[in-house]
Length: 89
Image (cartoon, rainbow, N blue to C red; front, top):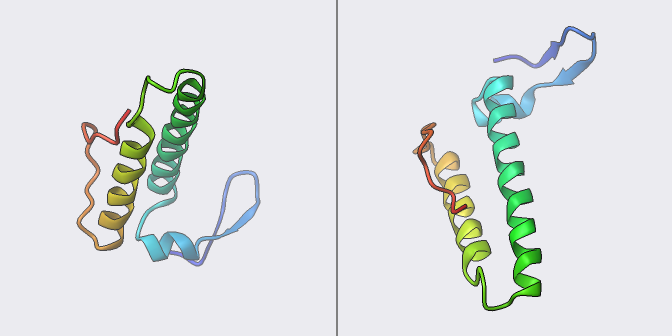
């Protein structure tokens, strides 16, 4: 891909990480944003669980297991972008 890139506002970014994960800027942005949103929602679920321990007992651990499997599949190259893949929320 590329070592560095200049975006429209003129800031230079080191794009070595994008080469390492074999993604374009926007593919990486999309994936990272999606994971961030899943983690934020999971955080709210955990706060709810803190107040009501008998509710949502397995949701966070399910999400963590699914995220781990997702990251491992990306590492070994078996990951494919699927709108319907289920992370757990």
